[in-house]
Length: 108
Figure (tube, rainbow, N blue to C red):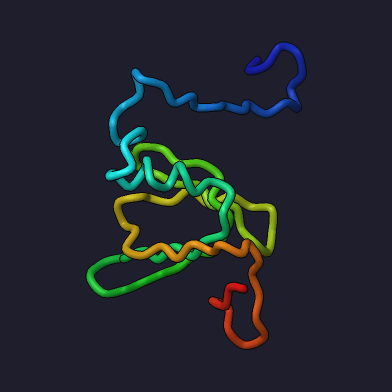
């Protein structure tokens, strides 16, 4: 039995960052540390798959680890686990709203 209190409860973890944390999570010259400062923001993340195939995902940044990010989809309540090493470009929205009639990449 995973959880004795209630089988329907989900595990929630808060990864505390402190002076004993790895430098890649605390020093903003590293991608994971920089992205930790962007948690909660809407972003478009482009990934290089293979040698010349770019794939993008749009969502709200939920969490950042040493080698991954979690994006919550705009259209649904799903979370995508993304490999941080295949990220090539990230466009971060300051407005926080997503939309557009014919352009799915339009932020306003």
